[in-house]
Length: 436
Ligand code: NAD
Image (cartoon, rainbow, N blue to C red; front, side, top):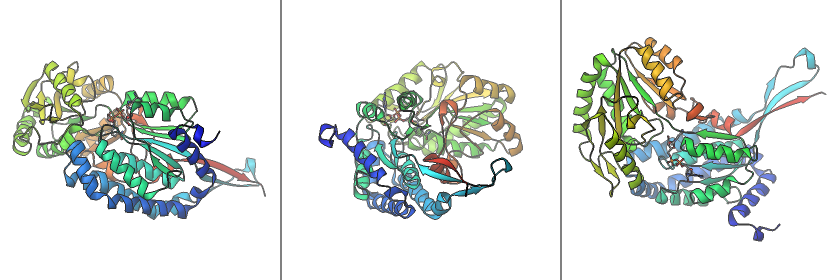
């Protein structure tokens, strides 16, 4: 069959297959050069990204510098420093049973990979996985989110400037395009998004036995023990919950405070929200009016007490920083991941009971946060709640270390990436035994 008989997406896939077969991506120098090209093209589009991310999500420049551009550049530089050592074959001992022989492990690229991106950090969450595809020696098709059209267009410009489409290309589109792409026999799929679409992706991948990494979401708890530094909790909640209008997969979803300090904590938090985020537009924009309406409807159904916030401007896609006290586990706000600037507050008397309730209602969250001045007392809590990642006395910044694997478990996903883990995610570990 010639390219002419294929749809443009099928033709692109066939060209990437042929390019992978040319073996150019096996060369480590080629991969490093590709990282340099990506970095150069990304930095070339800084101004365009500021405007696009402002239009799509109302992101301030300093957030773009930190969490969109900065994080990707940091990962590129880290990979450039370490790629030679990661890509080297690893010699292993030979047991007597199969001696005499030499054994080692090599890391092979999968082939043609597919990256599906979400809307909330659209640059970071398409280009950081792309670093994994490049260093692993794969070709790649990227589908950015259709709900951030300005940014998705700039991502396409970056990729087009840096790479030939037979190596790395962007396909724009939504559900229809994704469904078509998912029907193709990719060698590896990397998906970031909601658990529901994650199931669709995994089901489609099963038809071709394609390996997947799924980076999903969920309800991340923030637990406050009686001895916590309440000012520190407030500062971290202000940052973690309200940055990007709460649209962060590792944002604390709900606050779970010991009953003895809950009121004191809330008094400080409310004061700070009124001081720092007083307006309906203070936290940035939600991605769509539909998301604003979803949150407004959950708030309306809630049996809790709104102690600050609650203002909505659906047309402008704005929702004020909102704190809701006296929320119970069966409340509308506790049914699903909020992914917006609403913070439900629950309280507990016994930490063992609190751990059981978290594990029962929202098991295996993507991130878990515990605040206490006795860090030893946080360790059993972290051990008894399975989660993708965990922090004591901090939120979210663990995602910025290339030394730490980033990923979920169970409902919050499978597989991990960042730093060396990105290289491991995008390669097959091949055992080799040589009998001389
Ligand atoms: P989403 O699942 O709605 O969309 C993700 C991608 O899937 C988009 O590219 C979209 O076009 C595609 N898609 C949507 N519906 C589809 C369908 N029915 N069939 C095929 N493809 C479809 O996710 P989102 O709203 O963009 O992002 C928010 C979610 O992503 C939250 O759950 C959040 O927690 C999660 N998330 C996770 C991480 C992580 O690293 N674990 C990071 C960011 C966001």
